[in-house]
Image 1: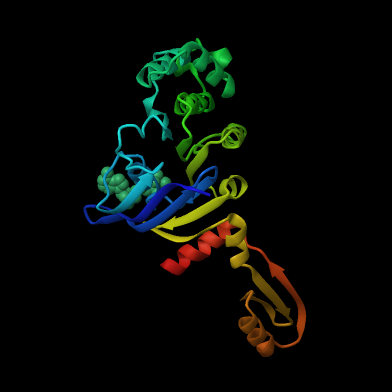
Image 2 (image 1 turned 90 degrees about the vertical axis):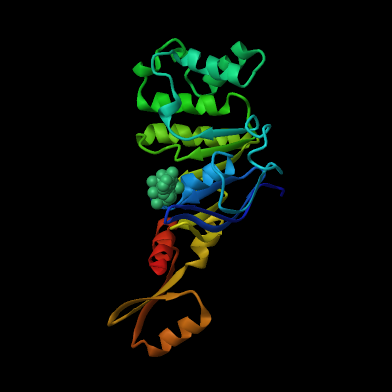
Length: 275
Ligand SMILES: Nc1ncnc2c1ncn2[C@@H]1O[C@H](COP(=O)(O)OP(=O)(O)OP(=O)(O)O)[C@@H](O)[C@H]1O
């Protein structure tokens, strides 16, 4: 599969804070790529570097084969960050109309109608944004992000602070857009969400990628064997040597079984190792 985003040794420092430290990234066409990490790990900084909103200190980035600062890139990508860009006093329709003009969208009435239909906001087209619920606002931000049919979406915590039902709706939307061909770069704190949605993930901690792969690969590589003896339980990595050594040292073995960690467990283990 072709790399649609590629970053080599990307580094960004703010004063004495190293927000991103020699990061390598490869996002393939058609995938949902999850970029996971705790608050302050460097996720938003990465999105800004990949979308031409910020210059790196060093490292190389190509997006759709070009420098992210190339003038024609903006029309091919969709960026969803927070709700701050919505005009509260304008209606839902007017907000999209404004963006349609900025993007120079032809046949904009029909395009706006179809986009509102996709995010299930057609009935709210004439409502002022200030009257919308949080979930509806998030769907409007989503509509604005996809209005110009970008093939590559950067979604910065798209389900943060949403109730579970609305978060599910947003995840369904992401899946649908991906099925229709969009490549998605998604940041989240939510490991369950990443496990459910993403084809591949990278785990970011303190500006460094600590591991990457499919959620299944990551979980499998951290699989443990639990040996239960009369004395208690002991967890051993799923490796021949470690397993034989532990069995040799154990007293009477009552049970042996394997346990696959959740993505959250993997992340907690890796970030603990880093400290
Ligand atoms: N403009 C800036 N000036 C100074 N420091 C910054 C700036 N932007 C980010 N930082 C710092 O860089 C680090 C990474 O921030 P970033 O916003 O990329 O993290 P994040 O993973 O997106 O966090 P969150 O999940 O809370 O949004 C943090 O320590 C942050 O305080």
